[in-house]
Image (cartoon, rainbow, N blue to C red; front, side, top):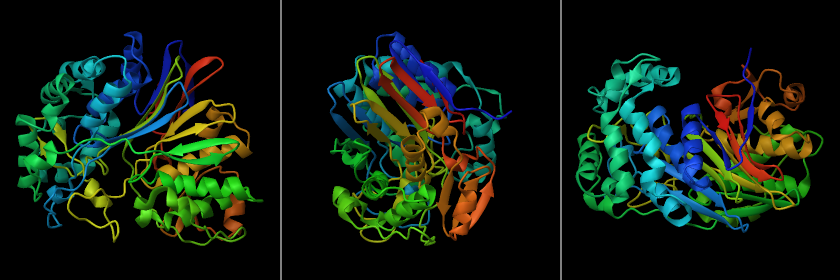
Length: 480
């Protein structure tokens, strides 16, 4: 029997996350008096313990936070390329400054109710006491074993384990404990020295100054009208603006007679501007050329799968939409033995100018959490893994709720499509499959629930209190 999407409510708060262990960590933080920000950070930290192929201390974290007064803030917890641009070709050359630790510190410092030590306590305990290795992680190790060994992880205990084995991570526990007490311990001192050394050993050019100079930023979110309310997306260097561009066109012009075709063409047209993402909200005024009848086959989307989401809401009205990631599976594969984690390969996000690799530059970033504010001011968080598929999946969920009038659970269960290269991957049973094929889309049918279609986490607050909803795809779970 296939999994169904999940829904939960909580008196103090509710959490949806990429793994049940992370949901438990978030709920524990609520019970200790934390708010939605604290719960989201706790859940993210737990994900770094249980899903190291998708996220970790060596990666990034992006989030949108809706405050109880209606203000929405964005934090960009992703780092830049080093000051000395490395020569390409080796894994260390793909590593950008890891941003998630500083993002946790900034989030909790500005909006948390507890301390960062409190919020990381569950993750420290999980790493120190051990977890049962998820089958998804064991399978990822099998796929990436050669890369991990090349990256210096041959002594990492993970590589000798099988699914369901108990995995204890003392080095990671020490790292989490250290950054909980002092987040700068990641960017300065012995741990930072270990990161610099690991990168240098594998062809990178990090210096101690590159790490020490890193700080998260709070850029203005990008907002566009949607269904009488507002859709807020992560600003550059996130690809979130591509979702806003497509949603803006549909909000103004309607979905036409074939909503899935219109949505696919709108998001494909938006992807043509990916290289100009640094322009930010200016792109909302770019015209999108969309044929209401025929497929354009203009996809420029890539196929990556990894990243992990957390959405949280509390009884005060705070709502968080967030994603953490090391980009590719196990990121660069470069392992930091002193810390017990791998480093990202976010530098692979650089492409052609103006998104080209250069000193201190931020590459286009696939992480694209979103917040939807309805006409009555109620806020819903939506986020999903899936790299270039993220904005495609979120647009489909938004369309299903608006035009098909589905509730969040039914919208998550509806079959999806995903454009890649010249094809439109489509889940079996999609109600628009025949129409899409007639309009010239080159369909490639895949099983319902395929992980390429994301793993949406959602949360919000309505008249009955905080709620959370989770995708049936991947290992997403909810609790309240």
